[in-house]
Length: 186
Image (cartoon, rainbow, N blue to C red):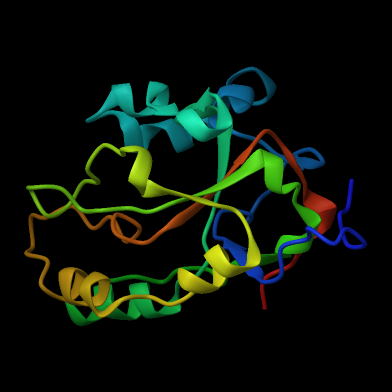
């Protein structure tokens, strides 16, 4: 249900990069995708092969796990992929789809701050200080790509994993999101 008329509506734009070939009428968390579309689940779950425990990592504020949420970005991904290109990577990302943040129920969302870990590539496990409420002020606070994120991507070596979102805050939404709420990439 849309929350456009709610005084608690969150104002801002969120981005999602993986809507190139949607199936069904909702964007699903990985745990839901496993049953709804095993082939698509397998493709998206590949990024967790090196750290399978990632899907069961708790998202305490939403009382669920990493595999139960849809990931949205509070920043446009273009600067991240431009930094990857400057590191010598051949990248050709598709433009992201957008969603008006006011469509989402704030009680089903949280902003997760991300800190790249000791290896400089994978995110550190969260603590209670890594979560912000999903509100307009929180979204505005994380709506720009940091120079630290760009510098990390530009310095990647040939054998380093190129995980562009490691130190970029995420908006986590518990449960499916109707595809009709997204604006197609341009």
